[in-house]
View 1 (cartoon, helix red, strand yellow):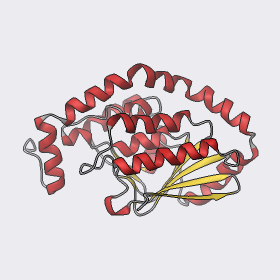
View 2: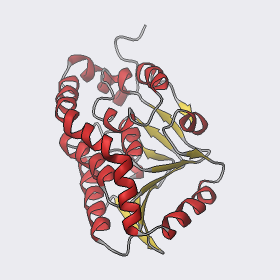
View 3: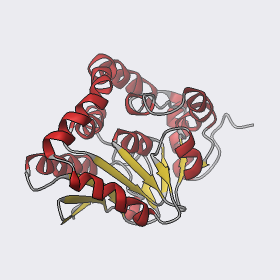
Length: 244
């Protein structure tokens, strides 16, 4: 069973996260399939840009705690999106949690619909938004990052746009995407690749400099006693032991 559905229309390849049973969580299989699909788009001269979409009411729930991806593979996926020589546009009209925000922030443009909501829930599980900081911190207002990294509060599309996480919030996400995709279709492949390279250069250098340390930090947290309690409590739908 494949977890990534693909379609093409007038130079735009749409890659749809299609694992609604686990809220499109980042499982090892989903990460591997999405990386393969992006590689295929990069090699296809007929693809001008990529839209990353989702089925169900959740864009991505973060890491699949029952079948998590290798941390290096997830970091590789985020880097693949940033380094892809074609723009990647996120179409979000549902919930985005934890690692899903790192996936979202790797995209060049993101449009959020009215059903969208966002939260960095790692601190509530005994974890931290470690590796996803590679894509989040270059995009998100630092004052907002301080708040949402620490509290795990949920926020809506308008707030996501205000803090720089998404490009724009709209009542009708597909209507809002029309001028964006039209602009991408009118741009030359060379122009798109060169322009994207200018914007992403600093982010890619950050991957090269900090990814290894953040992967190690994330692994240390996941192996901790607090994180085991936090993840167990989440799966059992109860408060962890530290909640008073």
